[in-house]
Image (cartoon, rainbow, N blue to C red; front, side):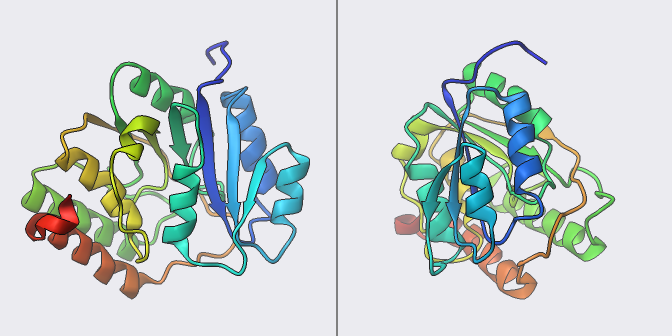
Length: 229
């Protein structure tokens, strides 16, 4: 591991009842990105915020829950450091990849996407894998963007890029727009491959609603000029 302090990095997560995974995830972040700010937008009814606070995380409470979009918007808008890393707090994403993501942003990329589905992950249902590859194919056909994963929860963003773009947050499938819109605006992106691990805790994914919203965002970004601004 590179011996450095990540004082220019915020790792942002949104959480809802992740008490089974939060301690491991936070400790992994500290191990691989020492000095990074860890910001959590939390809508939990369990001990997640208490555990996170005891580990030195910055906690923003959003309770009662307002949904993924508003929570992620706060997770991306509140940080002031120049690089923002997102990942889910269920231990599915490898914190050891954070240094690579940061390095690529520092090399000049504005957005780095960590693809889970460049191949079939061991711990992802085949239906989820196929859906994600179909979403990626639709993105390539409609927007000319080469990707294998438009729904990844692990990305690196340049803060000033996010500050220059408006996103529609009050709907599901926000990660799709967070990926596609910056590229359509001419920002430089890179995609790397990661291993997707077994989830700790229950999934909250609503598959049918997510699929509809994903296609809706992909299509609107192609044909709705106001939406794509």
